[in-house]
Length: 271
Picture 1 (cartoon, one colour):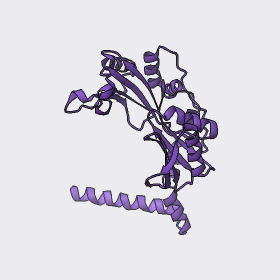
Picture 2: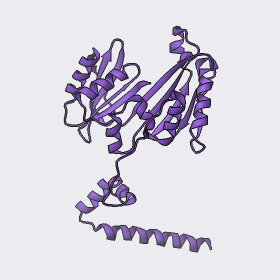
Picture 3: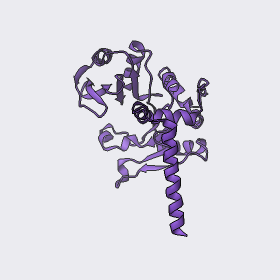
Picture 4: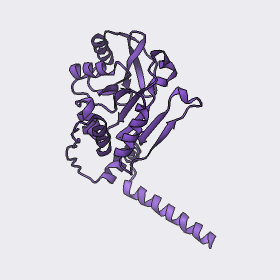
């Protein structure tokens, strides 16, 4: 089991220093990157003939964001954990490869038999030419856990390797809370499977190894979740209202009154 993608959010650092540190650890070079939405300054760390990761500055928070995928991900994770141990990991992908006849179908059977009935699965990539490789997935993209099984050896860019039976099982993990992201940044690839109950069950079925279930620290909020979500999601709008001297409660009640009157008028017209 290894990392196949690794991301990190780092505070109180210079993005160029972060990039130089990663490049030194991976034996790569820092090259100019392509600006992206939300990231005003971006550089790439190239290793050989491929990009190992990109490093950018979030224009809203000033935090450094690092994202890398592929075979250099284990080295990227090591370099970040050694040089920036206080980082958090908003996304981690881990994978395991199998290279034997029928491995792809066997993986699908294991995931189907372990994920539970509430977790939906199905094919997400069925190319016109099935020889290009199929992909089957379970879970929700963007959820804490999303699992893919795919015929890695049949991808056109890997045919030269001569491994038609090569199949890969991949878990994409996206912790939803800040404390969970910090915890993920300290997990081994095997421990990542324990971030949710159903991915843990799948991981244990595949590896035949006991995986500890991640237990999040008790989250104590001063307000209930609904109010907290509303206050944080619409923070800027609320701040503008207060800055303009508007009374929040009165404004909300006025909106409710207007909506109630509109619905009452619509009902009268329909009767």
